[in-house]
Each structure stands twice: as structure tokens, then as C-alpha cells.
Length: 181
Image (cartoon, rainbow, N blue to C red):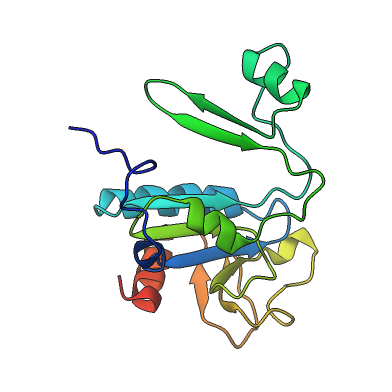
């Protein structure tokens, strides 16, 4: 039996506040998404219900020109709800509004054990910085106090815990310990 977790009454504020949230941050092309994939898979294999939020800096569109939903948005619909037998998506236009906060996105998610976030550098959510010195970009951790560890594939001189980027199970255990999962 499938449970309707979006429209049901279980989305009470009390349940929303129970979500445990952890983020990855880092420069572009540092490996954040690859690590997110590995972490999501590892947590899922351990039986956790995981949701993910990704911040996109430039505009994006998951819809395609010519499709009915695209045409509805182009005609002026503020929201278009796409629903099929295996997934749904809510597309909301907010060009004239302030970009929603991470908390707004978290409030829209169904109850889960863990939300992994990619991006939102300025949020106060605890983060691991994915850092590759060979990319030639400066680290973020000296300026961002919410970064509590660094994941790298090289030795890094920093006062934070250094996690091996290519060993996601070590990073999973770090997150579990930090969030008491």
C-alpha cells in the first residue's frame, strides 16, 4: 500500500521540525554532486529515508518547450503541478518574488530521516566543504562558520576534521555522529 505523504495530514509543523539536515558546499566542479549521490545511496542502503535539496545559482528549467506543462507556464500559470504514475513535480514561477529560503524548501518536503543539501553556502546548516586544492580555488571554511569539516582527496592544513573524499562511508559515519542518527 502506497502512502500519500504530500497531501496527507501528516505534514504537521511538528513533523517538519524533526528533519535532520546536513549540507555539502564547495566551489563549482569540486565533486559535491558525486559525493551527494554516494551519500544518498549509502544512507538509503542503511534504511534511511533521505530527501535532497540542490541550490542552482543560474536559472534552470526541468520542463521542455512544446510540452503542455511548459505551455501552461508560458501562458502565465504561477504553479504547474505535473503528476504521473511514478513521480510528481511542482513548478513555481517566482520571478517577481524573493528567492525562497532553505527553510521554505525544507517545509515543503515530506517527513524523512535526513535531508542532504547541496549549496546554500550562507545558511546556518552544518556543512562539509568539498575541497580540492588542485582546482586552484581558495577554501570556503575560513569565512563560513557553518562548515564543520572538510572532505578532500589531498592533505589540507586546516583546523577542522579532514575527511577522505573518496571514502563516502567515513563521511556517512561523520554525519550520523553529528546528527545523532
